[in-house]
Amino acid sequence: MPWKSVLVALKARQAWKRIPPAQRKAILQAAQQSARKHGPTVAKTVRDQGPVVAKRFAEAVRQSRKRG
Image 1 (spheres, one colour):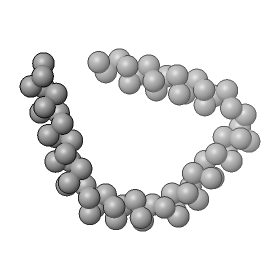
Image 2: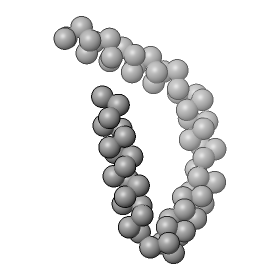
Image 3: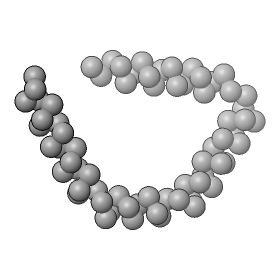
């Protein structure tokens, strides 16, 4: 169902284009500040817990495939 992700991307782009340029710039600046502040913490968490989360996700996928 890759067409769903294309549809979501198209809708997101349409919504983004409706936002005035000054507000788009403000949104991007706020996102940059947030990424600078929280990025290292998120990266450390992913590094430490990534394998555990991946294992749980794989197990959930296996169980859902068994169900049908």
